[in-house]
Image: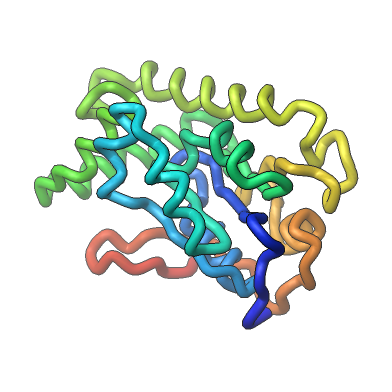
Length: 208
């Protein structure tokens, strides 16, 4: 749906952690015709220091965002952009999520990516996955629970999809075009639902 324009100040926010299908979500939002911004390195230090005003303001220029730091700011974004939509992507279980995080760390560590470590510290308070597996899972689950509790009474599990504020989604267990279309109240795109994995070698998403 090319050229779609969101209503004034209404946005779509992906508030799931990385490695929960946020790349897939990004491709989907673009297929709906929404402009999109993802992981933003320059905001890492600001979020760590609690200086989020500029981070919130940066959303003005796009229709949708996902991944860090936006996933940590769902409360502030809900207040700043009333009537917006939030999508909580999760994995089928915490172990599947941790496995993806571990693989990502191994690939990035081999190239000495400092940005990855800065993001790890900002979110989890540690630099490495190894030896901190249970901590990461605890933070991941606490985040998901916090999102669900904050939006209690406003989710697609409690309201008609188009009236809800939060859509919990797991691509591995069947969430797809119809869920997103009903939730966003937009025409359903045609074609196969994309399942995207990030190609670390070139920095481009590739479909599977």
